Image (cartoon, rainbow, N blue to C red; front, side, top):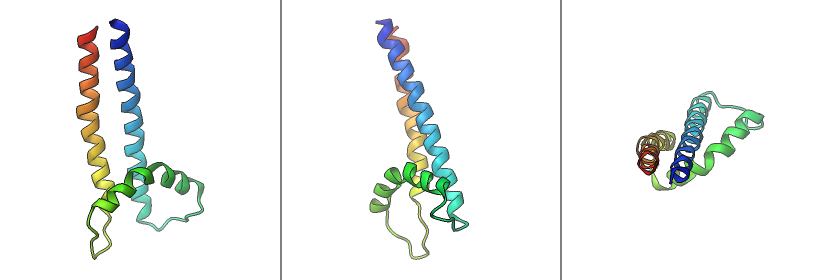
Length: 99
């Protein structure tokens, strides 16, 4: 059973790294959006491709504001923090119990 415990611990660590990279990408994209970036810049395109699959569904659900404020990065960031605190902690605890 220790193999399954190690597998769950490794999965939790990889998922934690992926969520951390995604949260940084969302934060950087939100900050860059304040300065009207060049859409043909490769860094802007990479950030857009990385974050849009997570932000676009939130934009469909969230109401639009008249002042043009996009709250989807904030909601996505909060969801990532929730997943890091709940899902990863649960996987780590489960891996320790299995060992």
